[in-house]
Image (cartoon, rainbow, N blue to C red):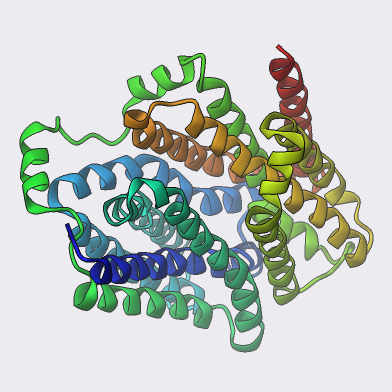
Length: 404
């Protein structure tokens, strides 16, 4: 077992790694639709695919990286994933800076970024390695904070830098951040999985596969936990509808006519409200309303927020609507994860939370693709209205199911 000093340094490196992953992800969000329309001249449906393919690769490869880290240790997997991120951002920088204006190259680069950012399973495993059971929730919570900070600072930084210096500079910065994390990992991160466990895992664990569909079906059929996994999938899908389409809506010349920096600030505002709710108010909701009623309340707020976005006629009204959306999402996400965690045994925690993580990545792929197709075929209001409709269905479903 490592001493507390090396445990602390391992945790800090993991925190930085996840923060940088999400910062890079966040930086691109306000740029991608704007760049795709104005420079690459591609359709909204294709923008949805480019936005979503990152999450599709995460769906496919998260269990794969987790399995590899059990056999070969956490450090080699983190080094491979960060090196891959440097490569992915370098390819993306070529496209965004105009050196190689190519849609296929952009899709390949986005897919690589998703593939190599699937290291979340290895990162969560490091937290499990270095924290005792009683403080594991706190450790995972801090990892969640790294996610949140990346999403708060990324969109604002991406929007601002692209306005000042063009599309290429923010992407180069993402690559530089990943390179710094890679150097940190190589030079200061100490392996957290003992050698004897790695050797034992190589001997005992079955072959490495991408997706275990049988395990997914078993989780969905599990009468105690399946319902919460399905609820989480639809929450994630409905919310992911707005990635790609929200920026196009906000930048419409006949609408709000915002630039990408202003869109970046709005997305960062979403991140700030969501993080505030998750870190300061969640315990109060749990105590006053209980988890089931809090979840229904959060779902209802997301329904209101999503449905009203396309009817915002001023930035002030949009901010109020985004406040409802993010407040609701800040309640329903941790409540659902908590209910999943409570309804599985300790030995199944990792695998079931991993499957849930995997399915939510699939939802983050389907959401932008769905949103992009509807935006192009039916008009700008429909991604939000249908997202709201799905959240209304989830709210009604929860209300009826929890009554029983």
